[in-house]
Image (cartoon, one colour):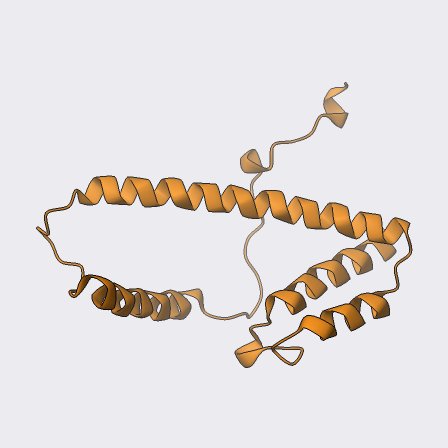
Length: 138
């Protein structure tokens, strides 16, 4: 295999500078932190505190390992979704047929609360974007 055709490891590929006007991530993280704190208090009867008898470094390390596994799962599943979109293009599945199928399992009404779509609509957007990119020759 020539060097030009070798698959590049995505983990070693720099990402472009961020652009766009999407949700402010810090606000979402703060909201999640508050929710996790409340859940932890319900589960353990107390908020997370220093000197609680646990090894915080080991807790962190174990959580990072879990996060790495989830991140890899998402990357693998994203690549699988791209392959699926390619298969659909080869079989010329109508995007309208796909949309009808998504609508049959959608629970957010097509856009979701605060533009947070349900899983079915998220998949629709991924497939739609993949199909449109393919049609544009990207």
